Length: 376
Image 1 (cartoon, rainbow, N blue to C red):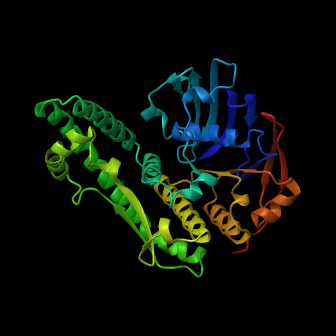
Image 2 (cartoon, rainbow, N blue to C red):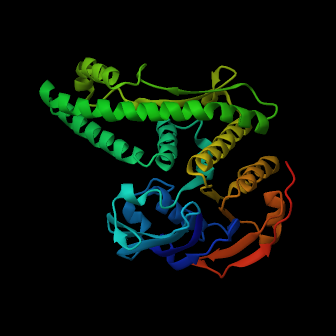
Image 3 (cartoon, rainbow, N blue to C red):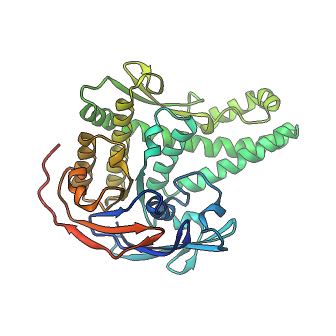
């Protein structure tokens, strides 16, 4: 999969700008506050239909404008087809177009698959359970096209059930929504559990290699339900109704679960050093990238937002060594001057450069050509 071109019109601080990435490595270079992260976010929006940062949709439209648009042209290596993807924002609403035809979110997703790695991700292990659930859901959206439909149905049923709980609705009314929650919730629980089970050995191996010397890592999906079946979740929803009525919210289901990391038997979010946190999340992102490449039979696009300022030199080299071994397209941002990038990246590789200044892009230029890569 390769992004051929992305164009932003009145998105964030861009009036009209175009990113034309190279086949392998591309860098958006410029001082802070010029729009580099906004460009990465626009590309990510096409892949995930949500921004990198939690904001209202209206905030994505350039100040003083009524509309905004993101266009992307994507080549799929498996089929040889090129698809035109577009998101149009109007106030609080949006339209999704695939090859000039308006489509639903379910039909839009998968047109571009991307993994993002931003400084905020380094807080994942010690942040809220919601952030880790969001990581699992985004990973599964990329790998399972049907996951979005099930997750949306679950979310709507839960909101409706919570409203009925607050209104002290009858058991008969609640049962209708409990059935939907049990069906869709058990699917989400199984999908998340299987994903974590598959990734855990790879993550442990990668963490041990990056974090040398590294403590023993354990990874598990902490579920509010022992058995991930429709019947088990339905039984628990029924049993918890008195508690849920008092709270006015649903107390059991995948929205209450967590992805747990332990180092030498202690929770990573409580005991891990800053370096261990960074090694853990770097390993997690690399494993996510590898798993998606295996699932899709082609590498997704990797979006890196100024990670060289957050990782030390050795871990930066490990990151890019893995990236090159996957032969995927990478788009990164950096505040470093172009002549410093070979040192920052830890190796020499074909690099297409675009300068970002005050929401504008300069024409791309090739900075240097491929060289054999030495292991870190």
